[in-house]
Length: 517
Image (cartoon, rainbow, N blue to C red; front, side, top):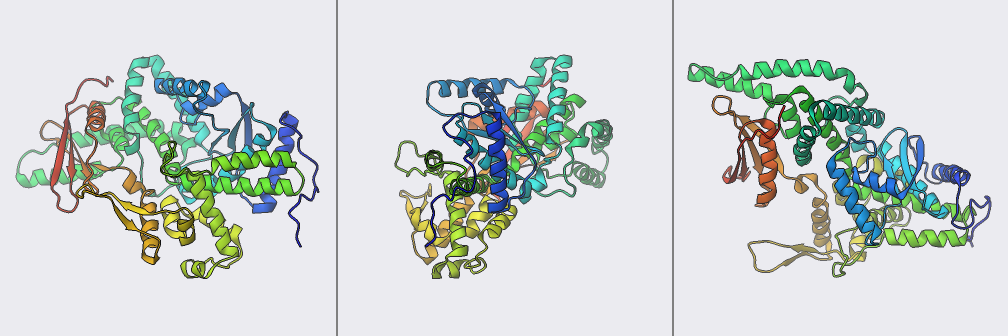
């Protein structure tokens, strides 16, 4: 009979909670060997940075990017995080990791030796492998150039503050930040992003913008109706309308923005694009890192690198991370991505190695295949949350998690249980849960559709309404006002039923001289 007791083939990495930098080095080397031997992970080179609590709070406040440009809102976030942390209302994350090459993992100096081991296994190898191999990160982010670009952006914003005044720059960034969710390209581009060359291309880009700007505003229609129509077609072709990336559209064509303002819009847009893959892979990314750290820490215990006390400490932290509160507990806050991701990874490994008849029917391509690690690595590389759940959430896991589908139709007086645990219900539940992670359902579909150059130059946008859900009045008014300030003229946003084309609501923002060039 095979024993699960530690074989003690390796020296103990540490005893007790204390550590020094030599201990960190030995921990890293041992975890790296386990990650290669146990899972065969493919990662960027690692850079481990030990930081204080204050530095972790600072990193939190700048959206997890310590090298990001300065902005007052980051200071506000710092004050909030520090308050809740000091009062004991919330703990800090044990780690922070940046998708770059080399991959930077920040660990806190207050961590115990076991926690440093866990963080290195989780971030430096689990997240790192996911960053390097998932198709969304490969397609939309530039791990090679992000650090250079952030340095460039930080210096550029600081130089603009020195030259044009801090208030003017903050005002511009405030407006741009409010449009970040509408500042990403959602469809693949022809060429990979090359952020290292941004500074060198800046002059050429500005020259092109000036040519486009002059050509655009010469197309104001005059003369016959046919000439006007031709001019309109040419204008729309030049503007490449419709355009879903509103920050990109403003950067290229807003009539009143100065070159330095267009460059800052571009910086904000690149930052938004950097985070775009992360918003679509929260379950998979955390699930991958959690699954990897669990396998690595278990191996370290079995080979005798960590003792029973450290392994029990690890199990307590791991259990807390993957806990899923039930809907009726006071601290329920939706589905825990760590819990769902880890549960699905373990379930996939089970299906590969020890499938039931039900698994063979639902997952004929992987059931009983026996190569769970390579199946998981294929999934980590080629799926996002929505497609991952739609493809791999099993009936067994739906039963274990007691998931039901509750339909909440505003036109009806009562909630409806739309799917239960039967053959048809499993498929409905899986489809409904996957849709909650579909970016097309999470974010409003708003596009720039036209510009009235013949009249008062107002900008026209259209929101295609899904399920009759209109935009929130207060937020829409504020964001639209920011957009009007950047455009320099009035802005009209029409909310349209995509099935009938009927305008359900119209918002208008008047231009103000708020954004000064």
